[in-house]
Length: 463
Image (cartoon, rainbow, N blue to C red):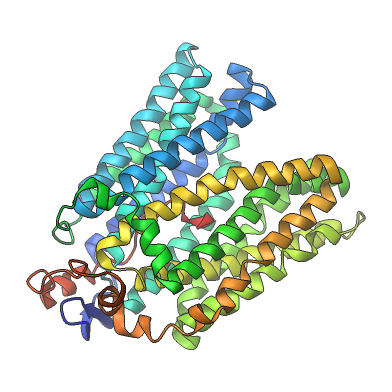
């Protein structure tokens, strides 16, 4: 047994409760997250492989497919995510798992029958993106009442699992696709979502759903909450700038590595796999660093240091040291980002009113996904006009701007928001009806909720 701090939302008091190191619900949720994440990354390249080899799409059609899927997913999430606050979260997550599995299974059958179309691929991609956003919104709400120390530990474990799957999944997916074909690989991915749903069916519902509100009040509530809370607004701007920089520079970084630096195919493969070890290591260390230095120091320090690894990329010269330079910078980037991500996620939860968490997470993910295609297109256009190296320098410079919100006075002087808990923040910014009723906020409920040690927040790596 161990002690964790849990916030009583009815009185905004801090309570010390005993939390088991492991519990059946914790094990099921960790296993469900691991299974679905490995399955997703195992089949991460299959949809594009089918689009290129079976449908024969051109580069322009491929870009259109990605753009349409992203826009559809973003629009869906903006409408649906705010309503998740009024629904029970466990059945929502199970339904989303089943929906993703069904979409992949339909593509599997169409591939086997030779009836795949661009529209089918777009629909499956949009469904997968929508499920990722909405699942993150639902599962994050289940973590809101977890003890602070337990939450940091759980998010660190989740980060480590993600990077381990990222390291193993795509290369293994290529081998599996070559060995058994695209159809069976999709079937394996679909089965991973089914297994995740079965595991989630065995956990307990953490509490009653929030009171229902009109659709007009719910839609857009997440963005309004983000903009009204200074610390939340600073985190949002930081995430948009850094995430857009990463998404925009990834395609041209591949061109830079292969064309400008002249690395071979196997060397390029190393640049994709080896740096993931940094993310794995960070996931195992984040909890210890937070315990030693505090969440705010780790968040600010890693938020500042991670941009340092971006800036030298465009200055790497071609030559024998190019591979070592790329590996070093990418390892450092993923290590510091792996430390930042769980700290960032727990901070966002601690400053967000409990009854608006799903709205905030869903709106956050949806709007950032809508911004990313704009950044990708802009940097790609700059690469055509100015060259790859110059465009890479501009893109990484955009990422460097992400430190400014973290250095702002409104973020650094948060007047003890974390210490006072989300209830105090809600009273200050949320207005009437934002705090759960005292009858719903009993110590017994929070002792039960403190057993939930991990959320299945898929798609949050891009914040």
